[in-house]
Image (cartoon, rainbow, N blue to C red):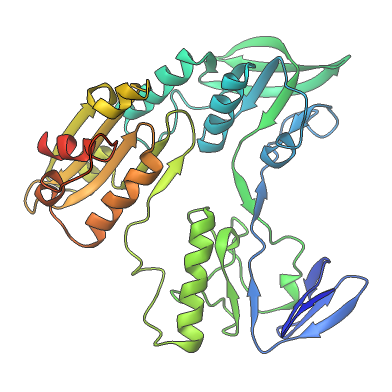
Length: 356
């Protein structure tokens, strides 16, 4: 146990004894007036025959500990985590094959954006098996044998390693929540109110364990909500923190905030769409990174920015400016006429929003 003033850090596995007590397994039982659950999430292990017995099967955490580069890597799942590892290992020099159950990538994104991501990764050497289902894995010497179907036709292929990227699940199974009044939903995520209180008011849940967006900075902002609820004016909630951007670290980075085009139409907005290729940005060409596309969705009646997609180098920085503009209720014209430094990637926002 390490001690820093009034903070004790205890290494161990904890389980609830009741609403006020937590047992540190094989150590001690501690009690608190307030308890905070922030146990995160863990990668899902899909129901595939042989998955638990086969060697050289990894998840996103164990894969990063490997020191040997697989010559041929299979990735089961074409979501954001799968795409990040696909881009990463393709650039390392591995041959990468991605098995995706759907007929295209990232179904929550607009099809034109998803196709642009696909083409970029294919140019990096990534191969995609769409409409595929992995049915069984096994070993043959040091190889992993994958049996899968694609469009109802069966295939067998050999790989050096397999990465499971089928999503993540909240870490609640071993918490002993059955000993408390804390409730979880059908996905095992802790149920919370707008202030992140569980169904036991003095127990709070933050981060991945409560579901929703699974990003480190969400957990950080959850802390701000809890702090304000306990010691502030109780003004911050999960519903008033505004638009939240996210980035997927493929190469180039994919970033988005707000609604996609398809989401805006589904919600009944009349929209205007602006779109420019990354190749039109001077700085992208100076850096030799012309791949990608920039896209903005505008409310036709109010000129408010409904959403923005940036598939380009440094988009993880640029998207924060767009998010701030949206949360400050700026119009697209305000961004179109903003003065940016030159040559920079951010000045592309002038061209994007002038293209409306």
